[in-house]
Length: 358
Image (cartoon, rainbow, N blue to C red):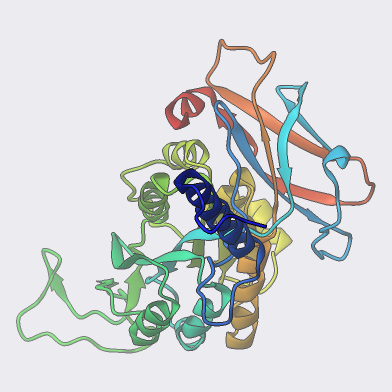
């Protein structure tokens, strides 16, 4: 039989035990429908000190993405020396993207690109941050980074391509008499044949450089890409060279994904004669990709293919070991043990960039 009056210390101990038990039950019990639970965040890229990020796209013989490879099936070599893979992930990761639109396209291409613009937003999700930039002679930011996909859709819908100020070059076969390069007083042009043509003013390298600068300070836990829609032509009036721009992209872990609207498929003859455009070279060197299409329906499909491929790359990292320190730039080679697969990845990295990124 318990005494009528319990000692104070006994009551205090009992209260503490009841509180502890209540807390344990509350932690173990599932949340009620009315409670707010933390949202699940998408996986991010894990980066350790002195690590190089290597995004890798793997495709089969039909050009389809291969997503079932394991860490042990990959090899990374730097300047011919095999490296230990520090981290490996095949999970989709959020994107930090600059959508870069060429505003100096051929007249016959502009309507197709214009009508397809709003479908670009469909490839991005709520965890992606996107900025919108147009370029001709100079890049112009339409909207800064935002997670608001509705805002991106609205900006794309209101955007009018072809509103730049082209330089007009007169066709000499239609011009009237000239005095010191100027039309003679009272003279009129005789349009016998031909027409005025527009001189290209776009500066592709400068535009890609500006987009790279925007992405440079974004987090290394996200995949950073430049989403370019262009014909790949360049007027050659850039402040920044191709090499300077590529250096910025590699040191900032930025990949270029481009939609080339110059032709629907690569034309072997033109490539052999003129070489690949800087647009394609940026993609190849940074581990991105180039898609080809100029019709509205093709473009709408390719926009989604582009973001899907960028989001679903394999992500490997390594800490350089036994690599010569005499030079800054080092070549990267990625191999897979499974046969008959093609690989797209960055071609190299800069040692100085690792120090900055730590």
